[in-house]
Image (tube, rainbow, N blue to C red; front, top):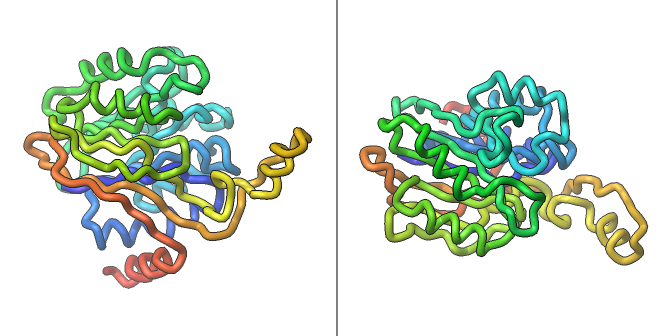
Length: 273
């Protein structure tokens, strides 16, 4: 089977790349599960119910979040009532949302998805290593395919999580920095790993925001609104091939879709493949 994690969706340009690309990618790549990190999907920060439903309608199977998960209070009912979205598992038990979910693909394979937050250069949260150990003990034994989205800042933090979970989950893929790393690999125990899968959004930007606005604040200390940029939209993600009988990864590769390619994928989906 084959799954993909699409990196941080930033604002409307990122959402448009997902909605135009994912249906065609499912056909072309034979994707069994599509997971999307959408914590920046609403104006660059947070997620709304309308955007959640927009992404699900675009054939996204599961949405992961990060440190901006609660920027929009209106998402709380979605977090508590829907099974296709997860909060960071190392948030307190009282935090809205579920620490993991188990989904069934069209091929009847069960896949667990876990979200975690790192601690290095991030807001204080519970230990992600203890949290993921606890969650793994809660996942039914017949679920062999497990995807972990580790939303973290430091590559050392990400590498530690990969080694901590090697052989126990299918993939540990990083999000949050918006910059894809070139370290995709399968660790000795059979776990696919990459520090960061990248950003889905406008790449003529500073991490998805208008360059001149960010520069002005950095150079002058005058606060400005970091508006979402618009130019050069791209979709970044990572595809993992999996042996469903063992849950071990058999392949991993980066995925990049630019605007022209997104248009081709959209046309392919519209024409039925």
